Length: 171
Image 1 (cartoon, one colour):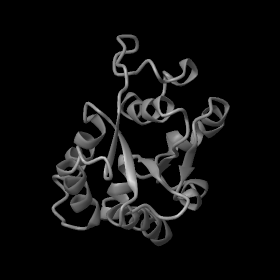
Image 2 (cartoon, helix red, strand yellow):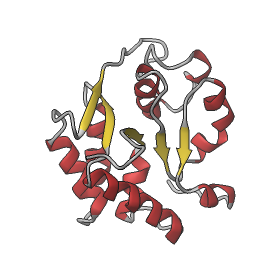
Image 3 (tube, one colour):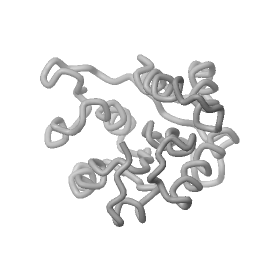
Image 4 (tube, helix red, strand yellow):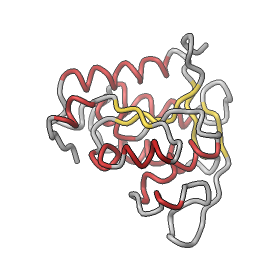
């Protein structure tokens, strides 16, 4: 069951990585915010993913070599295993395009030069009618373009705004 007022979110991979403790520069508040999101997902908050599993495969790939077994790695495996359960993962069709390779038809033209690895999250948000927020943690590129997301109707929520404003950069 989803928490009141929340039904589904899109979660950038760096949220799970921070929750896992993989970004040493992340503040304690940032880690706590990411762990809180992971716990809400464990408790039933649905995440939206592309139906070709690009997002879930990125989660698993980013966390499989973590050499830890904290909440981020466990959650990545849990989500992948339950990817066809609608109450866990809302699978959203998106349309890959050739130019630029790695982008999607759903990504607004002004955002097609954004990091290709992150365009799948934007595509899912837009395919869902921009109703779902994208949660991100410490990726400065998201923050650097936050006005463009707003202008294009994409709701990006920054879990670690204090870290971003302080200039912390996590790889």
